[in-house]
Length: 436
Length: 181
Image (cartoon, rainbow over all chains, first blue to last red; front, side, top):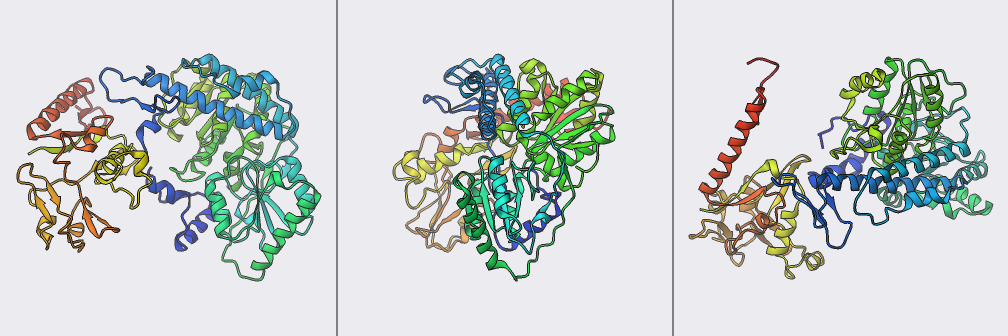
């Protein structure tokens, strides 16, 4: 990990990091530092714990090409690891699709939910998973719609004079709707990961703990995925009530949740808060899309090793300067929204990362008029984002994803998946795409 | 004298050496599954430091003019005449931590529970040190100066071949700027 002078581009996040340092609260950055140095076998994905004869790891310095007990070489280990991760992300997205009431085809489920104990990984499986994820994402997009709406972004969306309820993790839309209805004017409902399409967004994945440190969160409603164990532990330490979205149940349950938030608010009401972060106006969704030179999907979660949001902002600025329409979603989208970039017509924020399916439709429209279409994921953390990249590549969209130190064989997914090494590579990527 | 040598280019930062040292040299059970439940927790005498991608293991260098040896007021720190390794006679250690403070490598650590210092003794009574035996990439070597020189010469030979293939490379530490030559 590089030594970071600046942990985040977001000034609100940086303000909270300073507070955390003074209060000796460990955040994700401190834990990442304590983890150094990180194991090279894992980084290169050349270790395997799949069977009980393992664990195996192959020595990359071996002269004669070391193999695992079952005979996997370095390349096979990496491919297998990538396949497993993609399958895991595909299942995560399928579970979210069910939350949105989508009825997934049994064959979709079958193709993603098992790797069938197959020991010889082949590119065909990856194509199957890619197609299944594309179908899953498309069904989520159809269920969600793409209505254009204004939703603010940034730490400033937390209100000082009102109880704040934060929905974190992918909370089902029906739950969000019922919660907002129950809250009425008595509480303010905002979001972190996974609900960007419906609620104002506080911050994105890596800085989730800093939202709690503002002292302005009165209730945490947690959905599935993306909620770190550290987040729950910190909420407990700060006496912030945590409720699982699935346990809210009926109307009485929602009413009780609002009362819990209001009670928590009573304790801090009247106390001065040292927190003063701003928020940016932002637009989620789209109606008419004007594409000039081409269309690019900018996604990903961020990575603690780099300054938070920096790679997304740099990539987006570069693409906009070059006349491309940037379609974004998830934590990358939140990064742009927090920086006030989701106001312009050149940026379309689809909402959450599970809304990435809308890009497939937009891409088809752009392709129909012969405009170049591609995807860049400068920093990935979660498997579902990786699965999204694989889905795009399987649909013939050239996709550049930051796969860390994994080196994949070039022929996977029709040669549409490429390693993204950093913003310095951007002009080369553009040349390749426009050249086609 | 036989020493533990480090080829830091081969260190993957997996910390297998740390685990093996703690289990082999500081646990009662001598098994990983048993060691993790012991109290006090077994301590490794080798540590993997540095940053991701630039990690290296470090243990006692058994300095020829060891500052820990000089600092020890109780005579607990001694040099083994046969192997040349510096070790601690823990029965004599009073826990004053003079050795801890004097070690330039941070290779001597206090055991809070037993109030004695802990350090690497190069597994002098074993065939091969635990860390060397456990290293999966061969980043740790055990041998005398001549053995190490052989490894070094081999490595330099490779660098020469490497450099011949690319005129910009002069050594692994220096790459010629631009196209000058």
